[in-house]
Length: 215
Image (cartoon, rainbow, N blue to C red; front, side, top):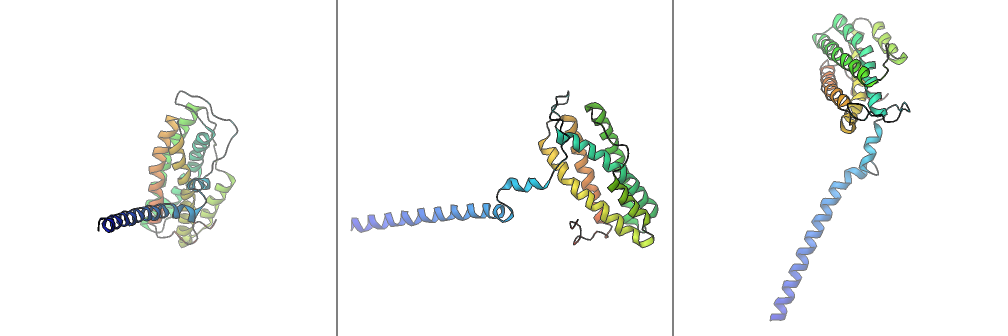
């Protein structure tokens, strides 16, 4: 009888142990499956966000180390203001709905502030900044200028929403990785402003999500 009870207890412990192991394996699989579905490693997801390396390496400043990524971020904030400010003014003046004009108000207010902050950061950190939009940005402004009447809102919303979506990833990466206090402060504010702009642009109802990331 003791032998039977002992064997029964051992069998029970074996089953219990097996169940625990199975549960742990299932949990691990559930955690790892999304990673494997979207790439070989979790770090692969960060590879979709890139910055332009100016070849200047990392330099020390009174605000902390300044990397190529930091410099590119400050330059891109400045460049954003150079075309998104006039784009916002066009929306204020030419918007055919209150939502489009409101989006214009937010663009003008947000990029006026970020433009000032990026110029201050550029001066303090010795980063040379642009004084005019890139040829591509000038082309976007030309597209908006050429759009007449009801054609303006979708052109405006699509171009600005796509641009903000692309820079949003860079803002997050800089905020996560920078060791420079001035760049971090700019990234903090840019994160809030860019998210606000994404939100008001979507509220215009003229953003086509099916084509948003097609180019």
